[in-house]
Structure formats: C-alpha cells, structure tokens
Image 1 (tube, rainbow, N blue to C red):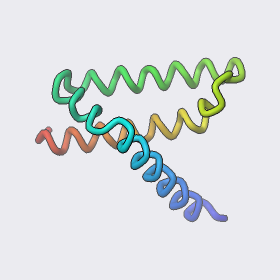
Image 2: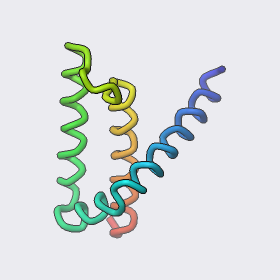
Image 3: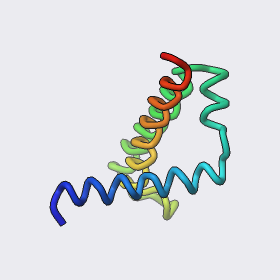
Image 4: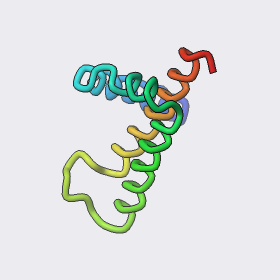
Length: 90
C-alpha cells in the first residue's frame, strides 16, 4: 500500500469511527459546542494530547486506548470542530 492508498484507508476508518461514536453519543459534540463554543473542543483535544503523552510513557491498561486510537479520536475532533465552526457561520 502506498501513502495515498494509506491516506484513503485511514480517512475511511476515521469515518467508520465517527459513525459508530455518533450512534453511541448522538449530538453531544454539537450540543456542547453550542453551549460552550470553541473551548469545548480545546478541552477535548487537550484530553487527547494528555492521553498520548501518558501512553508514550507507559502501556495502556484499557485495550481500546492505544496511541493510534487516541490519534484517531484527535483527528475526528479536529474535523468535527471545523464542521461546527462552518455550521455556526464562523
């Protein structure tokens, strides 16, 4: 697999994660953004950053909390942040 194919594969995986989490959590990201604005995403992103820092120092005890999973979450939060900004007219 070359880098372009890997990029396509990873973005498709990101979408699958988005769909699954959206089914579980509903519109919580939009609701939180509408209530608190940009800071709501900064908090979530900071949590993911801190998680990556911790995982680089020690192995996770929770199976689905790898560095790659956390990177995926971080990317999706950044995309969702941009979507919320676009929908709010910013």
